[in-house]
Length: 78
Image (cartoon, rainbow, N blue to C red):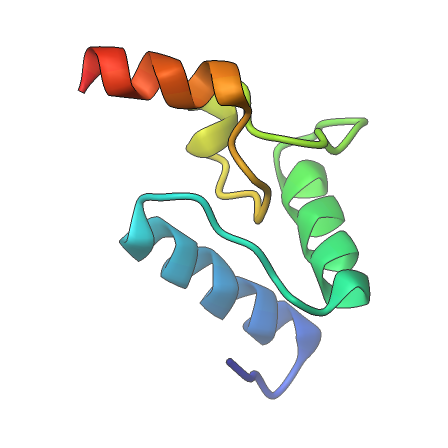
């Protein structure tokens, strides 16, 4: 993915994660950290989670792995 600005890149990443409706990761660790901080800031969250633990976090479109307990919950409830 690419964007003319970081803002555009992050918007494009968010749209891609939204379309995927599943776990997502960004291979470049620096970009991943910046993107996840950008998401946290857009939702006025002080901290970036280390993994997705619930539907609310999933719907924020972080590029983070799902926790094992959240994966189990999804399997049970989908």
